[in-house]
Length: 154
Image (cartoon, rainbow, N blue to C red; front, side, top):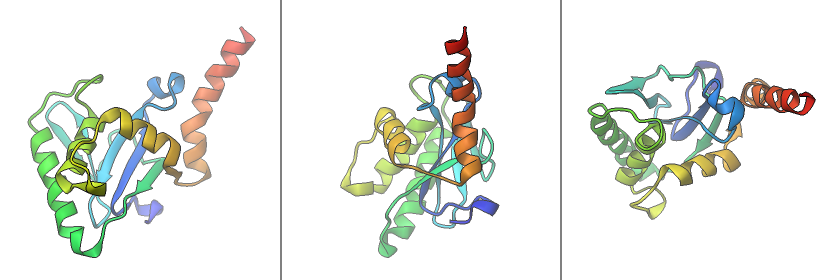
C-alpha cells in the first residue's frame, strides 16, 4: 500500500460523499483496487473510474487477503465487474458503487463466497477499514462532528 500515490493493491477503498456522509457517516463511496493497486469505481451512470476515484483520494481502505495463485483471478473478476457496470445506470439507493464492488467480489469468489451485498460491504468497511492516516480520519469525521455540534447547540 502506498497512500502517497494512491496505490492500494487488493483493497476495498472508501471516501466520504459530501453532505450525505456528513449526516450518515457509515455511507460513503466504495471502489476496488486491482493487484497493482489501481482503483476502479462505479462513478456514475455508465462510468467506471480508473485511477480517478470519484470523490477524491480514499480516506479508508480494507485490504483483502488474496493468495498468490489467485492474483490473476482477482484482476479478471475486477475486469468482469467493471464490464458489467460500465453498461448500467447508477442509482444511489440500489445499484451503486457498493453493488459494483459486491459483483467484483462475487466474480472473484472472495472468501469462498458467491453472494455479497451493499449493506454487508457498508458495515464491513465501516467497522474494519483502516484510515490512510490522520488526514483520512479528519476528512471522514470532522464534517459529521460539526453537524452533531451544530444540532446540539441549536
